[in-house]
Image (cartoon, rainbow, N blue to C red; front, side):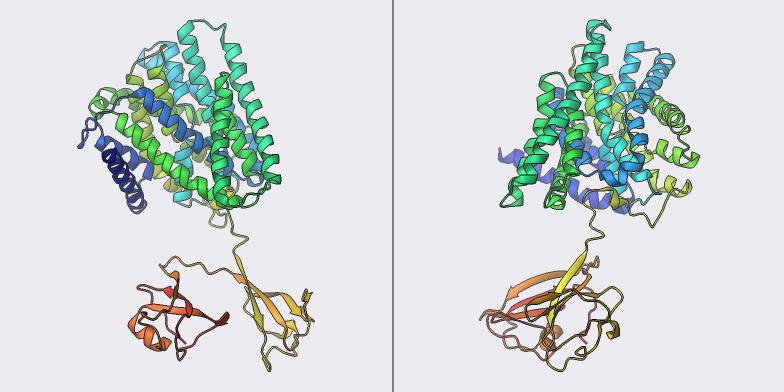
Amino acid sequence: MNQYLLIVAIITIICIVSSKISAKIGLPSLLLFILIGMLFGSDGIFKIQFDDFVLSEQLCTIALIFIIFYGGFGMNLKSAKPIMGKALLLSTVGTFMTAMITGFLVHFIFKVSLAEGILIGSVIGSTDAASVFSILRGKKLNLKKGLAPLLEMESGSNDPISYMMTTLTLGYMTTNSLSTLPQLLISQIGLGVLCGFAIGQLFKVILEHVKFKNDGLKSILFVAIALLAFALPTMWEGNGFLSVYIVGVMLGNAKLKHKVSLVHFFDGVTQMMQILLFFTLGLLAFPSQIPSVLLPALGVMVIITFIARPITVAILLTPLKVKWNEQLFISWSGLRGAASIVFAILTVVSPAYTSKDIFHVVFVVALLSVAFQGTLLPYMAKKLKVEDPTNDIMKTFNDYEGIRQLSMIQVSLPEYHGWIGKTLADIAMPNDMLIALIVRDGENIFPKGSTVVEEQDSLVLCAPSFHDESGIILKEVIVDEDNDWLNKTLDDIDKENRLLIISIKRNKNIIIPNGETILELHDSIVYMDVGNNVIKRA
């Protein structure tokens, strides 16, 4: 037991550290997770014997549930509304067309049966949400208005279509008959949509009226909702992934309190699920078998990347007057990844088709797609002139807070303050600061330019929150009898430590210190640990 916990801890730490390294070398972190899994696998350095496709399918399905739920929950429908029709067209009709074109070409070029060709096309028909989300966010790829939400919505909503096509094709290969396909199609889509909307609406009403004492319980509830959204329709042969995505979209765009904290919670959960997913897939692969499937995999990669995907995008988006450079970028952004490999595992555990070759073919295709297309995505954005520095990629997500990063402070004006007797129009203030409210004799006064500031007014000031990426950290400490700072001035402390004291709480009073302020016993101080940053006290 302890050995397994130790291995899990070490692997998780290695994956997290590697994600930092990947940002510096320009490789997608998801690719490194797979490579780390391969290093630990049967053919790798650490020789962990693992070939349980059934267990892998179950683990990866759980991971996909949260990744797809997060894709829906984080999608801002307001920003996606102008492109929703195009995105849904690509995620439904586009996924079907890409799969069919790929399937027919694989059938004719590699001389496999038509059913097997369509199965391969179905498995890799969808673009990978985890890869697209990771690269767009990680690279902070600011695109022209509409492109980012289009890619987000397409990649988040087309996995259910690919999953449905995979299961339908396997169903046909099991029965060798098309008679059951209409029933399976209706149950897959109908139950998926019905359960998704029903569960989403139910919990939307509940969450809008029920108050939670802490965010932790609400986060746990959302985990349960995501699992329920998948399990319920799946029990009746419905499309669980479609249901999960719909529930995610509905709850993510509902008027819920503390929504941002929920998005951040699922961001962490999804990161963990991505590590689990990609590492498991890497662990499951046998590198020794890759050379035998490398040529077919390269062929499939070329077919879907340079033929099937571009043709599909052109047919669907040209009538909608989408510019050619945007079409090319959308085509290039069709990354294949974890979802395709998970669906390939389904083919291995299915009684209809148990060849492991398809797993390694799809594995190599996904690996090449993430490495080749994913790495070159920022370059292609620049080359095709679809970048827009003024359009923040983070605005396409529900946790965007750019318009709310403001701080409010209250200041009581002492006697003879320079602002007393002046109108607000006459007070020189920084451009990004304003007086939001005046409290006078217990009454709230909403100010305007002609408002005159009076003695003993209490002013509520509004300004942008401090944001620093240079390593500054805010800390708080209480001065006790053993503290070396006791009875020292701030100037003396500054000489000995690389820090800057911001405020001192003493006997319920807040003191804004200067260099001559002496720290006393039980002072509660807030200070900046500036590290190697140079900050001088005025």
